[in-house]
Length: 219
Length: 130
Image 1 (cartoon, chains in turn orange, blue):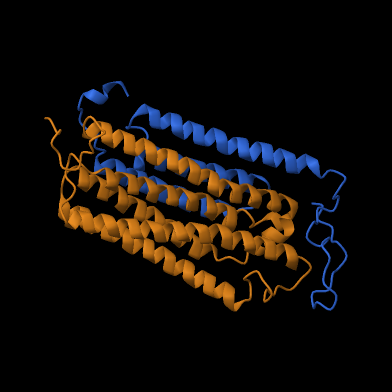
Image 2: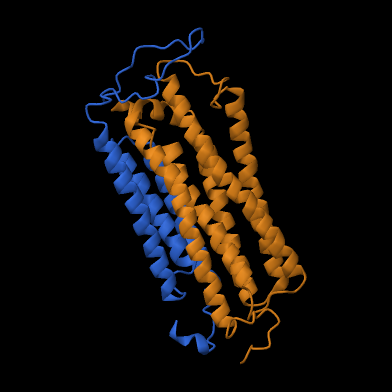
């Protein structure tokens, strides 16, 4: 079946297959830059953690492991609904596509709300780095370093989720307008790639920030 | 990339695969949380990061269709991992060796000058050798 006359086909591509494979490849290259962007923060965290294991373990134990775990499940569930949205765009089920885009947005918002409660709790405890930071004990300075990295990493991650929410909103509008069909659904696919990438960042943030400090103080 | 001029069907991953991967991710999340409560010494880190890597791999391969799509995407993914490892190994190696004997207490923050009169009185560098 020829699709040369498809309204979504840009003139510089031979056909929609060519267009889809090019946009997907472009998205993967963009995600490489994103991985390197987060990579700098991850290696900073790893180096400081190896320098100040006691302070980082103490600070890590201040995080709520259950809220972290719930958010991990919420984000994995949002990845499932995103994957299902991609599926329904490929089989041209517009209503189901829209339902699963909305579900993904609801789960993404749930994640951000839980994160907001965690941030608020840290605010009340004066655990936000800066002049009002308060932490008792000899490790105070390096605990502050932990929280600087914690807020930088989870903050950048949350910022990506907010951008993802905006992209999903855009897809929802385009789906509503009937822009997608079984031949043209690249935007859904590449926003999906972005969304799963953000999920992967959290898959690493969760153990690094919440889990692996749990026993470091024993030795 | 050779078949750009032919139009072939886009591989559609069945929903069953997505549900299976979702279940797998939940099991691994439960495992990693459970493992965090067991004291295994340095193995805690190894287990947590191994499980995270497995979870990330299945997300890339199935949710992100890396297994089914154009092979050139795999080259980009491989390149990403290579550059990330390069960053980690070179930077980590540099920090692990550069300060030997220079900052023996590994306490660069408390070595900065504290303003006089600041309520945060500078204490002697604490030992972090562990």
